[in-house]
Image (cartoon, rainbow, N blue to C red; front, side, top):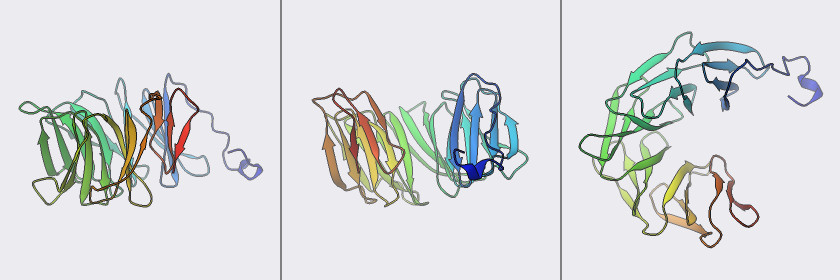
Length: 242
């Protein structure tokens, strides 16, 4: 807290000693991940709870009031909440590549597969499997569209898929032969933005492309696709897309 009104509310916070830190907002709380523990603070800077996760190279995914801590290439993830005194362990049937949560706590796991290159599996908050899609392409990122639909992108000319969790086949398929998609995120207006190595693309919830921004001549060195403004850095000055 940098304002005078925060002086009597527990700020500044002295962070625990650790080698790595990752901080993410979770509702009105803050989740702090270190290389050994997960901490929850409220808006006044008060420590609510902490958990030891025991993961060597942890990552977190956040949705609603839940935090998932996982490690790439492992077969286990752990679910935490700032209002709970214990965690829930979910075991997958293959190595985890990435994890995404919905606002109501559904969990999407992109994982490797034995008969396929990758699989997308969706679980409810209790760990029960709701949906599974197997692909011969490497899926790298996914995001929920509300609670009943999901989109995923691939490292291939099959750029990605849009699914309904109630149907067996995707309702839309993306195809880009010269733009490798790297990141996918849904925005506050309901549109989705995909960052590729040659350009950024936007889609509506039906999987229809509604915008594009090319930067292929300048090259891509950094991007941030987590907010309503996309930051894409290249050889020339940084560009901002609204």
